[in-house]
Length: 146
Image (cartoon, rainbow, N blue to C red; front, side):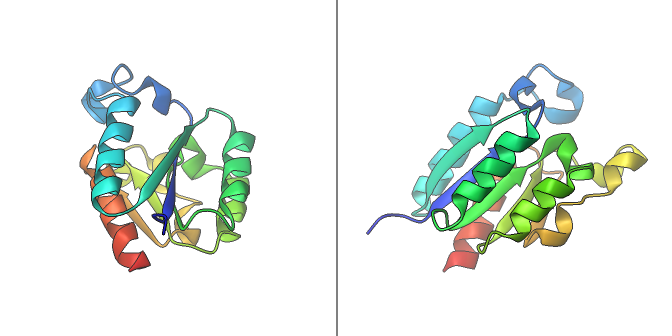
């Protein structure tokens, strides 16, 4: 029996983690976070597949491709959090748990960051815990799938 697949999606500018605004996002790179997530997933009996894109359509295609294939999605949509109704609609068509993930706490930042169009279709949101959010998101997925 294969482990349930979790699709981890990273939106625009997350490829710059470690260099971009380290006072907000920390010094860990996206590769560091994915390595942590992979280790946590393995320990929870989950398989992890990661995709980062700066392009909305690529993320939407990945969400569509996850239907019938992945058990859950963990997504840090980056700035698409606040604007992408297309990602919202794609996630709404996914049948498994969806965890919205943010390294920082958008509610403690600029007012425009306080609205998430992803939250209404997410099972839950984890924000403000930095890199530890990846562990928390995968633990939540494991509990939801149990």
